[in-house]
Image (tube, rainbow, N blue to C red; front, side, top):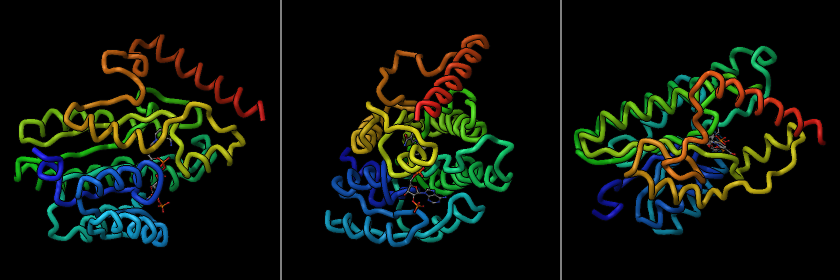
Amino acid sequence: MEFKDRFGPWALVAGASDGVGLAFCRHLAREGLNLILVARNQSKLDAAAEELRGLGVECVTVSADLSKPDGADRAIAAAADREVGLVITNAGADSINSKFLDADIAEWEGLATMNIGTKMRLAHHFGRQMRDRGRGGLILVNSGACYSGMYGLATYCGSKGFVLNFSEGLWAELRHHGVDVLTMVLGQTDTPSYRATLAKSGQPLPENWADPDEVAATALRQLPHGPIYNWGQPNDVAGMAPNSPDERRARIEMIEKMSHDLTERV
Ligand SMILES: NC(=O)c1ccc[n+]([C@@H]2O[C@H](COP(=O)([O-])OP(=O)(O)OC[C@H]3O[C@@H](n4cnc5c(N)ncnc54)[C@H](OP(=O)(O)O)[C@@H]3O)[C@@H](O)[C@H]2O)c1
């Protein structure tokens, strides 16, 4: 089946206006999929939509804050009765940049809403439609943080761990209905959000970070081969996912030391 017949005619991308989300949109537009673009900043959405329409597809923009309880419903309402064959949940970075007790609980609850409640709602609404049609796909963008807790990233790691297990469960259920599910696990990637985070914490730009365009292309290729793809790592390597308590503790301590070394260097 052509990509568009399998995953079209519309795709909804949550966190579509820059970085990996926008890169997904460019690839999908080249495949001829129409796009529903969700993010907060309307002028960034308008610029993205204008560029994507130039590739010959229709675009709808939705300004919604996905960290709010009504964020997913606003996106669902904007999709209306369009046939959405692919949903990509991209927005999900931790822009709070704080230890857990040093930020307001409302901020952490917002991050958890974006990475848990919003993703569940979008998957539930559009997943039912895909199951009824017997085709479609869900890509849940994830982070290596899904594999363990990390210093300064407790809620982020916890919510990304949810995304990992949720995606695996959905994959197991939906593959029997012709619906592909993939959680795409990213490492450091050159996005405006991550650049802002690095600048805020005074860290240098990484040397070998991933290119959003390549990340998006890889995820779309890997979509039929879920439930997990780890960026930059073959599928038979378990390097990102140690499982014994000793290995997990050692990994947490190693990452804590690395983050201290980085911030002390500047
Ligand atoms: N970049 C990395 O190094 C890296 C590493 C590992 C994993 N990841 C994962 O990759 C995904 C994308 O990361 P990213 O670095 O590009 O940052 P991001 O902030 O998660 O994504 C940026 C996109 O999402 C939108 N967005 C952000 N917060 C939103 C909100 N509350 N409601 C609606 N839209 C929102 C942004 O537009 P607006 O600001 O206009 O809303 C923009 O379109 C995330 O899930 C992240 O966890 C990234």
